[in-house]
Amino acid sequence: MALRYAIMTALIEDELSGYDLAGAFDKSLGFFWHASHQQIYRELGKLSEFAWVTRRTESQKGRPDRILYALTDLGREALDQWVLTKDRMRLQETKDELYIKLYNLSETNIEYLRTRLLERRDAMMKRLYLYERIRRRHYDDPKSLPLRRKGVYLALIGGISGGKQYLSWCDEALELLADADAGDDAESVREKDVKQQVEDAKVTVSSPDTA
Amino acid sequence: MALRYAIMTALIEDELSGYDLAGAFDKSLGFFWHASHQQIYRELGKLSEFAWVTRRTESQKGRPDRILYALTDLGREALDQWVLTKDRMRLQETKDELYIKLYNLSETNIEYLRTRLLERRDAMMKRLYLYERIRRRHYDDPKSLPLRRKGVYLALIGGISGGKQYLSWCDEALELLADADAGDDAESVREKDVKQQVEDAKVTVSSPDTA
DNA sequence: CGAACCATGTAACTCGTTACATGATTCG
DNA sequence: CGAATCATGTAACGAGTTACATGGTTCG
Image (cartoon, rainbow over all chains, first blue to last red):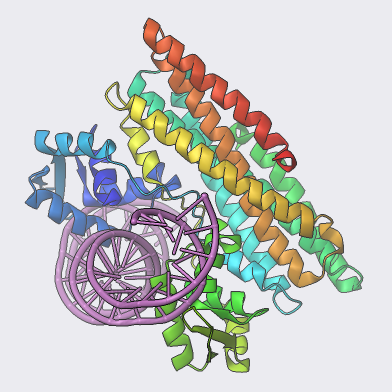
């Protein structure tokens, strides 16, 4: 059910196409919710059935038509009601396979898992950079924001601080795993590289405005 | 697919029943993966089909029989292989409806959302307390752990630091929302209470060993 | 010239939730 | 005496993924 309302939330301020929405779920909304375009088109179908949104086709030259969706008063009402329903409280369900894989850490897979960690670290850093920039540009003084924007701000910093915590967890994990097989000469050299990468990256993240 | 392997992971060290497994997913494993008993029984059915686990019935007096599952060599092999397959990296997909609801923050629902935040704060604190204790008891000196346990340790501290970050996010959110409607006298008094609760709880969390 | 972007969708499947079903035992 | 714990499951539904399908444009 939540995806339905997430879509409507995105439609409060703008009239958007399914494609736009998919983009939003990869960008600004994506820190705490993800949805594939297939799911979005499916929900949009239902939302028009309920008359919670209206659809309007816009022709473009040289590109496929876009179908723009707008929230109706009825939809707006349904959304307001939903906010007040009690949800199943699910605390921080991270659902990352990597955690399960780490439970199975061994000599055989340590190298592989280290690579996955670096990958995630990298990806998170890119995301954080984007979000930090949004925060600085639009949410620099949270106390003076209008109420609605305060909520958005909170969701945003929730994502940002979660992301930062994740980064430092990656660092800690990489350091522990680097120690884990010291002794082998060839390995040691490679470990040094990994540690150096981690250091380099720390600098990049602490001052994202320079990139 | 991941649930399947999470179950097998839990079966590496012990022979467990479906009921035991459901318990594990509510406790030690539950920080980063959740599964209902229905899902678990379904997967266990498939795992025995594949001969990745064996089943053995144990009669009990005055209680229903338990069916104990044990990992086979074949299952062990499948698990080891799975660890090395590349997953689609999904970064910190929190999927908490509360974030979407916060996007819709207004005078109408602010009180309600504050209550949800306190609820989550409370629940997370209880969980953190449990996990911190496990860490202190069994993972106090991570560098001296055998390799496999290091992986478990990393998953554990991933959960712990994520939880701590979540708590401080809740605090920040509650403080911002408390300011949000100051000015009304009756409200102001209530806000004070909320802030006091937050302070009280901070003390509790920073020293979990006293409870 | 190939890759990525724009833009929409369908079909089949697996994963996850909710509700239903049973029945003894222990604890407050 | 009612609720919680122990212990297993089925059925129906909703949410999410993977694969397939189409076809023009822009950029390197």
